[in-house]
Image (cartoon, rainbow, N blue to C red; front, side, top):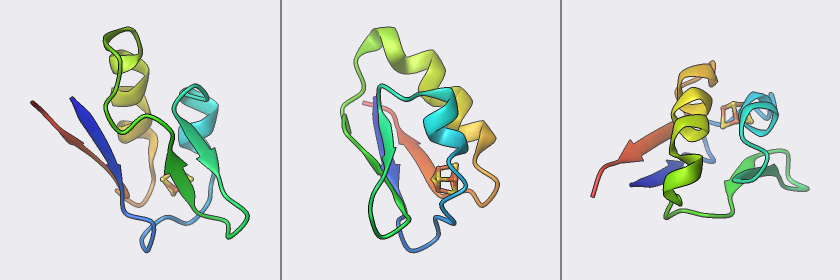
Length: 64
Ligand code: SF4
């Protein structure tokens, strides 16, 4: 699976980083990036939780 960040929608709340710090980071511009767009299987669950946690729907999963 892949995870895509809509950086124009991101409000920089940091919830995704709190849930899955291995994958997400807040950049200097205040919006999140995904270090691993292709999500390793062991992080899939935490990425799904991050997608659910995002208050503005800026994270989207693309299944393979
Ligand atoms: S949880 Fe959503 S709004 Fe908050 S930093 Fe992550 S992508 Fe941005």
